[in-house]
Image 1 (cartoon, rainbow, N blue to C red):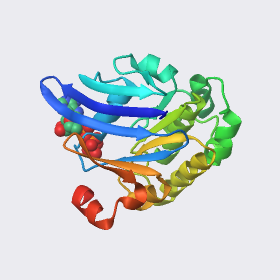
Image 2 (image 1 turned 135 degrees about the vertical axis):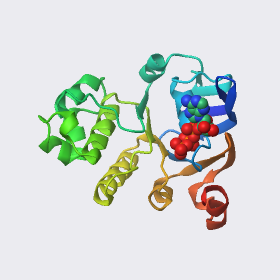
Image 3 (image 1 turned 180 degrees about the vertical axis):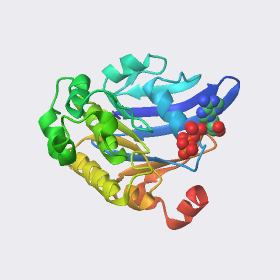
Length: 228
Ligand SMILES: Nc1ncnc2c1ncn2[C@@H]1O[C@H](COP(=O)(O)OP(=O)(O)OP(=O)(O)O)[C@@H](O)[C@H]1O
């Protein structure tokens, strides 16, 4: 059984339909890439999976259990950890306090997050709002891991960051994959994303137009679906 199985997903903003039948699936331990040009429905798909948007049709199954229509809070408790676009941490808490506030029992502890991101350990007593953008992103990932999610979702986790920090974040993603963490990643940097992804799904105008192994997304297809 898939860890995540999304089918026939349709989501609206008021009267305006944004998703027209999105299909997506992710097996336990896989890294799956969700791609598409701007405005094609990636963030809406993620919002519909995690329950901040209520799909009008379709299903979202987490290990076979239907979660579409449940509250975001309940879905989070069932094991989905999100690193949202624009990395939201508590600005007036320290790095350590931010991590503690997110903690739920499991293999992820502050020690393990510190080992994954040594920069965070060095700044454990610093307020989150004094961190650089890249450090805040690491903290956002650390917070999501502290909830010990069965599925980690990263929405544009490397966008707008300095190249050296992006490399640190990709290295962390590769390490998480090695450790068996299931991850759904939205990112525009194909050169980094495709090598780490097991499979990928491409959206166009709110529909899944490609699904397959990352290696099957040839240069031609990349150009057709993702080129500008
Ligand atoms: N709050 C909103 N109200 C109305 N329409 C919205 C809203 N958010 C997104 N949309 C529309 O839904 C469609 C899908 O947008 P979405 O943000 O999911 O795309 P995306 O693939 O994540 O794009 P990007 O890469 O730019 O983040 C777009 O047509 C967008 O204009």
